[in-house]
Length: 152
Image (cartoon, rainbow, N blue to C red; front, side):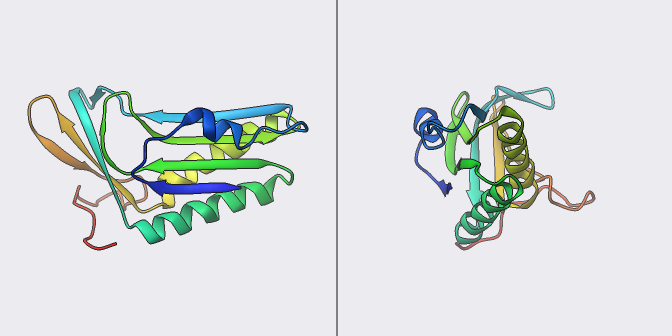
């Protein structure tokens, strides 16, 4: 098992290689990238901020949960923080298992729980020059878009 949250560019091939072994006949991956639009506005970049210690701890817990749900599943998940441009990889998840079903299930579990639980905030930068913090999926439905809390 491997998880990391940090500013380094994500090497998707390396993440995939972490879960490849002779017994893993199924390798599933999820790669999230910065897209060029959001809610009808052209996006030129994204800033990801995190409560780093908690984000690392929570992502590691999610990876461990996914592995416990399907024993003998190898999982690697990395989330990038900092300034990213359109096309940059923001998150990569790879899961390997003897069969495809558990590998797909592990990838889905990790991305859904990461979006819900890991304290990472994103700020979209638009072509118009405007920037806006995006309300995270784990926030209450009536929460305003706001900057992440200060501190590490």
